[in-house]
Image (cartoon, rainbow, N blue to C red):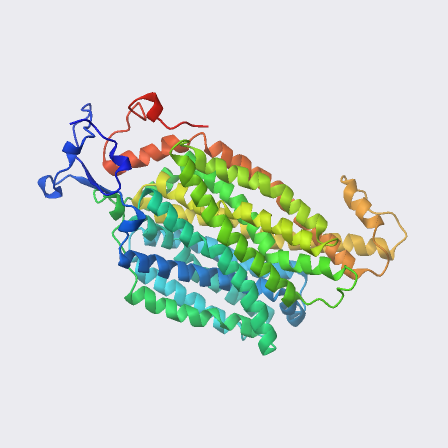
Length: 532
């Protein structure tokens, strides 16, 4: 019987025997045997989307629902930020500190939950986390003291860390290959949609009930529903179940981290994703307020409300997510067969395209609202292309028994150097520039010497007694820094493309329990996928 490429036969179950080194494995249909015939058989199930069971669909839907309310909760504050600042009488840097406190606790506990997720019941850990974040969000809404409010936001981060590190690994244990990519796109599609809903729910609930605190009391109710679904409905598969990796054993946490640190594709893609997190965190937190300040400077819009801007910004975020996340996954799946290293290339190009779009968003905010929303829409689409692809990269370059630890490590790095500090960083720059701009207006003395003359030029256009324009200019120049970070992130992803094929093959052969061959692909040259 002639050999066939079973990787393209989605309805077969392939049985790979652990053979002695040096013996070439037979890839023909003659390898289809009963699993019971050999105790060391490795089962690799390759299914199409039509073969997904109802129970698996329910599990993925539950995970997506929780991810949705996760990001709703995270960005509800951004939709009511100015009301919180007025209530507690805090500056931009203090406003950024709210998100930073949340992210700091989130990133610190992510590796801990990653370690636990590779060894203990993932269902119990997630239920605990969702319960904790729902409770602390609700209780925090009653805090009259800003310090206590910040503390409860930090506790929310601990709860959300338990879920974010574990949920993608459950998807990886249920599905393989393109089916996994589609499910990850479905899962990460909840990030921009949830973020957009957070702006809308926060601002509209606060507006309807007359107090910003009510905006924080919506997601805890949904969180209680999520806890019940996790405990009694969610399926928690065996680790590596979809890939037949039952022979893989859990190793020590130190060994896990050593292996992860030696993985160039994982480390480089994590650095690229860190830049994505930096940009997403800064824009999500300050975007509505920046556009609000720009619109307020336009003639006839002096009475514009932040709640209206947050609502529109949320709509833009949701639509860009609806288009961007699945588009990234679809593009990667369409090109993978032809170009083996296409995933990080798509991510790199997406960030390089997004950088000038963010710049144009900042430039046009004061001149034209429609043009500003146009550029922010396409900037967010470009950023959203990366979410599901980065998650897919992690899952196929890390072995199943280390994926939760890898998720935790990636969250630690990306948040520590990314969105943990970016809102606070932007706030600090904005406050510093506001002081410089204000002092210029109040004094006839020259502006302090700067190496960058663009800020000096900006000062010359500001008339006296223009506090709104000062706030706008200060925040505008602070947000410009994200453009440079996007370029750096794009470079990291493009370098990842040099290692991705080799690292993926290592994992595939570790799962199959065979040595990595010296030749990656066999067959005629026309069958071998190309590499950029």
